[in-house]
Length: 194
Image 1 (tube, rainbow, N blue to C red):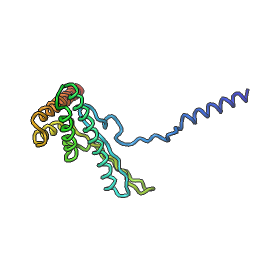
Image 2: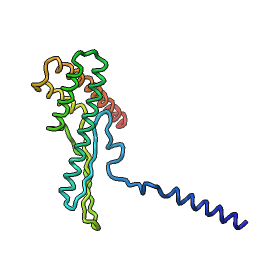
Image 3: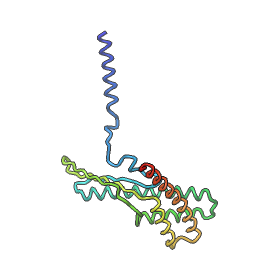
Image 4: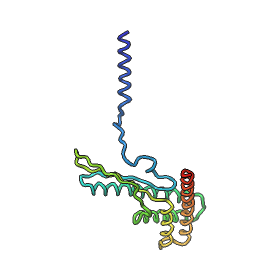
């Protein structure tokens, strides 16, 4: 009987140890990982992390990483929107319009991110490694970015009138969605305040 109890105890202990450890290591919770820092139908959001022995370099790395993530999200979203729109319409110049639209998005992202807002920044110092780690979270309000894109399309000399009309139509449809999401959010806030 003692042998049976000892065997069960060994099995139970083995199960507890195997459940407690992971082959991947210990999960680390970093700042800005909650839903509040994820992109949604109103905002594009991204966070970056930078580490260095100098705090300004760590901050610069975090800043670049967050902005690169934002640029990638905007570019991917706009490509999907353009492809979907052009797939639904039987536009003869669909490939040309898609190229111009993507070029416009890249140009905007490379020169100026409209309505970029810093959501939060946290800095940590590890005395053992003598390194700073900085986390930065940014957001771009979708409707502000889309309005900026529409203005840029109007002044871009490489886009002909027909392509400009199609691009503006694509942007207007996305603006309607973003504005509707803003109104819905404001309605929810008003109800919560009552």
